[in-house]
Image (cartoon, rainbow, N blue to C red; front, side):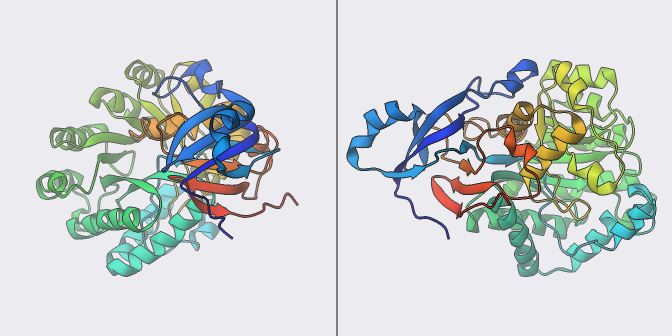
Length: 426
């Protein structure tokens, strides 16, 4: 059951209050381990925003005399709501049949060439009515929220024609209006080349620029424009053309970069001033250093090589040590049906050797910076949104350690409970 809380309340006696307080930007190197933990911590919330943060005795002395509603977090961790900066949550259909293909040794590009992968989801999404697309996407989004995600990016990219791409972005807008979550929309028309332009990627790039990007900014349906800069999709020249056109029209660039091989995606992200470059399984040293100089956030997606069975994880340690601000995301999509940032954190620690502190910063403050939301979410700071989690674990290291269950006892969005129930450690 979801517990009711007043518009003014206080969370008290957190064993660890992970504030992530510090510079209002993506953190790098050692900063990623500085969680600014308050033991026996408390957070005072009023009208959906954080009004005071500190040790419980001090907060209660200042604000506890008015008979405030209290949530006792004794023995538990309190932290900012998770920010998921890379999702494909809006789509229709599913592709569970591809699991057998992957077990039999076929890779992502093999499946794509056989008409599966993205192109299968394109067929299903094009065929779905607006209400059906909304209902399927809302179900996934509610699961994300129950696992602690309070802000997320949501991409188009399974329409690849103007009508369906706009319907996807309209669905993102409707989801954000009808569900208690902040969604940041991204146009990903340059996901793969659609059947209508088979063998003519340059023609499709020109279609994107002439037929979609010219009209898209006026709709207000997208903040970012993303490109899949990869073998089998779009090369660096084609990607640059799309991103520069989008940037000229007021959309901020993002790049799917260097997932399967070095395609110059990291360098391109730095060149065009992208807010993030995502995947980064095989970037060059020059690309990494260019990203570090330009403070481009590297969004790592450990669920993707896990679900694709490639084992080709991004080298998180290398990226962090060279100064790239690193974020984590689920990459929720039909190939990687993972709605849980908790699982992404676990995979990052076990398979990419990220320290728990780094993975948690990457899932909050750095993730917020990867979608331009760092001034309102991502840390427990006075004036920010009261997007908060109470996790039924004794310390933050237990978050990646206790895997396979939802640790969220309480999820608050703008100070309103989305989930409130006991968590079993069995």
